[in-house]
Amino acid sequence: MTFWQKIKQTLRSFMNGRHGADQLSMALLWTGLIAYLLGTIFSGVQGFFLWPLLGILLTLAGIAAYVLCIFRMFSRNNDKRAAENRRYLAMMERRRTARRQARVRFQNRKKYKYFRCPGCRAWLRLPRGTGVVTVTCSRCHTSFTQKA
Image (cartoon, rainbow, N blue to C red; front, side, top):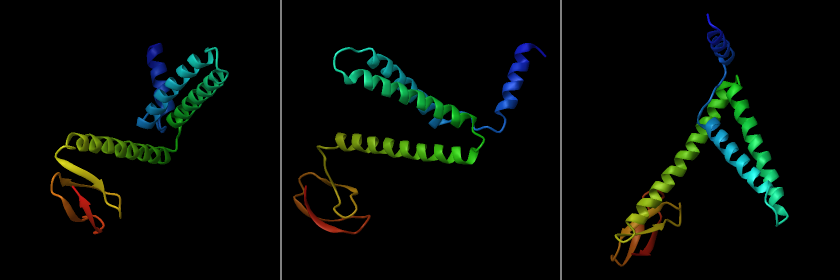
């Protein structure tokens, strides 16, 4: 066995049973990198006295994100780390869905009038030009009048 194969095998056996990298860890890694770079830039700025303080805070936030990322990768509590990652992915999916729906509402804004239900805050739509209509929400069954 060569030197590099021994190192590879040692790392493999060290990581056995550990959580490793997932989407939340990679997001923490990138967030830490961006915060650290912005902190480095702001700490060197002269002028307004709060810029260096902001730089120091961003640098510390970047380092904290790195430490948390490394902790998550080397953790042996796989169930807890997987649950954290699932919550992160669910939150990101809700954000993606909200952006996608906002884009569709913007594209169809000339055909439809979009509004929210006063009971459950669900998005509803009516074709433009239908006048004043009594609307019943399909989710909470609240009836109200709406001008389209």
